[in-house]
Image (tube, rainbow, N blue to C red; front, side):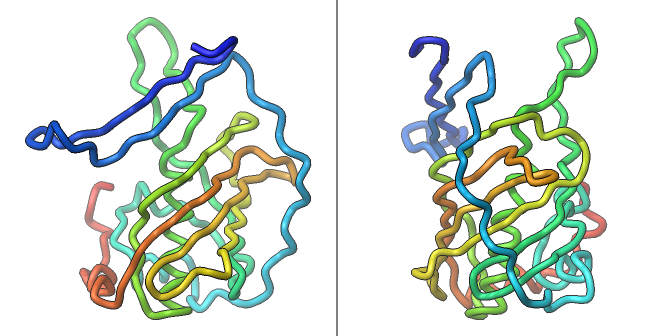
Length: 205
């Protein structure tokens, strides 16, 4: 513990590879939300989304099932990034039987939309399919709620066909709810086959 905060180190292992973590992270829990930074919001992205709709993009570019298809609209799509309207995911915490189902403060489905947008962006910019490698930090400043949110993804100029680096801001009505820093992914044209596995509409997730 560190003052009013509780700090956890989390590692995920495959059952048959207990000596090598697949993912690891540091989780900081506190009894209240931290104050949001006062950084200015990025300028809106100019440019049209190169698909008729997000659902069309999901069919052509991704393999996600309906639970993960939560991008509702793309307002801007260009070299610097993507601006989208996203519906928070339907993931819910497991109730303990002692009362109402608790709310999630962290929405894994919503977070996943940033790498999803990176796929759309990288396929158009470089014709490569990137898989997510890392999120340096995810900070939550206010309850996410159930209504649609605005997600602004901005790619670092160093991004290339081999990989991307990006930051993302999640807002509603101009209020910063959460941000992701240091989102990274690596890709190749060989991975484009993941876009060619057909629609995932029949899959549960």
